[in-house]
Amino acid sequence: MARVIHVFREPDRFVAGTVGQPGARSFYLQASENVRTISVLLEKQQVAVLAERIGTLLEEVKRQFGAEVPDAETESEVDTDPLDSPVEEEFRVGTMGLGWDAESEAVVIEVLAATEEEIDESVVLGDAEEGPDALRVFLTPTAARAFAARAERVINAGRKPCPLCNQPLDPDGHVCPRTNGYRRVEQD
Image (cartoon, rainbow, N blue to C red; front, side, top):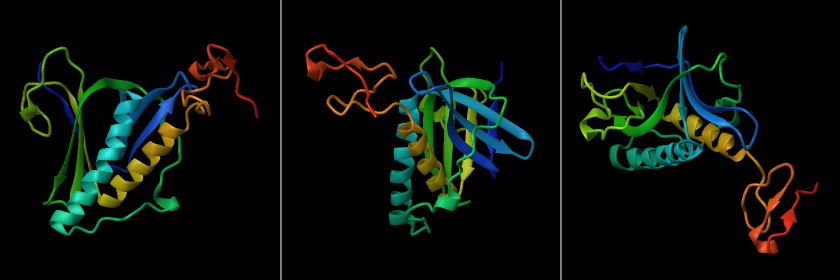
């Protein structure tokens, strides 16, 4: 079966978001353009890495190409709306790619469906006919910075950390290693 590459050259919206309660959240990337919306499932750590790497890429682009890159997003640029419903998973993300398209002066984000087979690097950000399905999004530097800022907020909106061991606190507490196995409960 031929590979499907969902390409969003000028997305109306590209965001990271979650479904579920803290401690049991599912993380998604969602791209929308006109009437088309694609959602892909990924791990919290993948969202964190993507946000961090976008920041690094933008600094490198500014340094090497002299491109106009915003230093930080403004509050009005960060999308705080929930994911568009219904959230229907197109695929689970395995491999991620990130690049700079000098011709369109855009950050290119590509996520590939998880597979059990090893992926040839030439498939990432490429148009090979064989390989895992992919979502490819082109973002302006400003939109990329806003995506990264929202992604960081989504990640940090989870459970509060224990002040002693920094592990996430469940609503009913947790067994904190710093209290020799006694249960620590969050108190307001």
